[in-house]
Length: 441
Picture 1 (cartoon, rainbow, N blue to C red):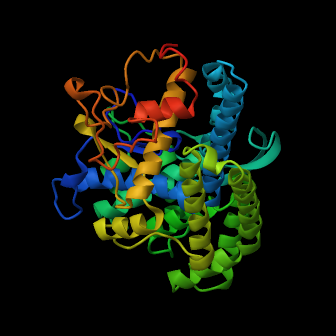
Picture 2: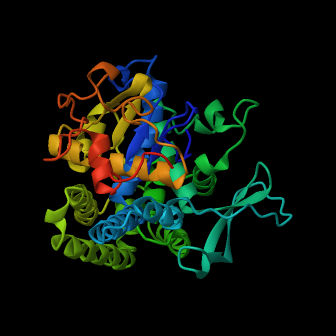
């Protein structure tokens, strides 16, 4: 599993990329099954990456990242629209100027401090608190570090670690790696081919050692990470969570995990509500801006749809107040999630694209957003666009070289034409104001 945020990569490991709303896998989705022994590993890897998508839609940290990114895209397209209205020809320069802005939003999900060495030699993992500079808030914040008994180093319990531990629990769950055998399972220990990477399961190992009375450490770790991601800045919140866990276990007999989860959630309601309000305010601000311009450009319709999805995620967690973890995170569970939270674009081998959701309006709107982000990234990275990337590099279009002028609308991801356009590249160029410029950078 890889969190490299590049679509056009030679790497075969699956990954989820928020920037393009894309989940890339190295196997065919239609062949996946949690009931077939020969495909369970692939399904587990898919579930790991799909969990990353759900983190984006169902946690405040993920939603704030998503909304932040949408806000950047919106401002960029407005700047381009003003540029066109003034009869200037600077669209590529405007896109390039947003490079730093698009990098900043990743901090909310991937900010991670280097390991620390305090010359400690302990046989059990434990936490320490450190004051460090936080690039998200641009000031000092209290951050949690966890001691790793394998290499004697302290690792930052960052959003990246939380995301990976949560997704890894989904992987373990569907693989059927049980509570009694998980610490001995080869998948979580380093090998020559797979070097040790503690971001994937270090929190699990801590809870496994620290709280032997918790019978389902996989579900507990998943819930802890999910709950920790229910705020914008996770550092100080994790410290509070750890203290609350100790308090609940000392004052309540742990004999019902649902009661325990309910108590732990209720202790965080005020904190989570304040962070939810911040995100909802930002969503409403963007929607207010969109209401004035949405009829001028069809690109704004996908942005509205994504904002609706973000609101659905906040509402879902407010109403349920519990983990989305399921004892059997099988294909039925995935389909249930897809009905509520739709789907990323799923990129499979041989240029096959699909989605879990059957909502054609959502599919087409997300396709347009996908096109805009792909072309924008190419311009930012100074890549030459000498031919349509959606025909060969990213074969989302079903056209061939022989029928390049024919409009193809049979596949849900072949974007329907605007009134004055007939393909995804044209529509993207129209949105980004590139029609008057050469497709070279």
